Length: 208
Image 1 (cartoon, rainbow, N blue to C red):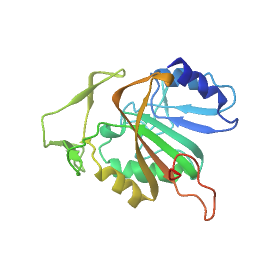
Image 2 (cartoon, helix red, strand yellow):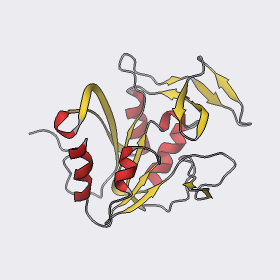
Image 3 (cartoon, one colour):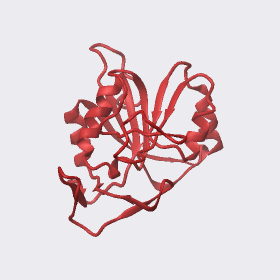
Image 4 (cartoon, helix red, strand yellow):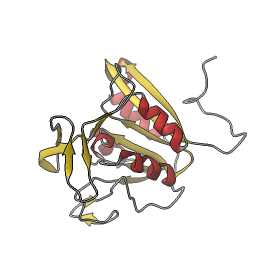
């Protein structure tokens, strides 16, 4: 992990990075980076508007952010999207705010044995919750009761990302050299389309 986090200091100066959480080790490292424009946020409460500071926390709803079009190079989220009631709205919003060629890099619970996402709970227009499965809460530093999981994703998500306009890849990461252990290190990389004839980068280049 030391090698992985220390490599963050080689990021090009001037990058705009939005991290949709404020508690993990990656956040601690990125906020110390001297050359990037780093934005860290959490979802505090639906009563607040995106961009509002609640105490020390910047509140941002991934479904309705306050960021300008084409303004962010990278969006990072670690086990956040499954807690968004209308995740497809959030996909469109992340696409809107990313610069061309920008990436949303994220993790989320993911099924391998089925194609379709599992909609465990749904929010109605009046804000009430319909439960299709037993309520499943994840630990959350802002809420002692935890945060509800609406969706467990599956390969269908990659199709939904493509329909939104992204180029999407599901990566399985295993690199003890970089401090990544285990066999289930799944990361999804969704990149906003580049202009025509732009050179492709290593993430999306086909292997030789």
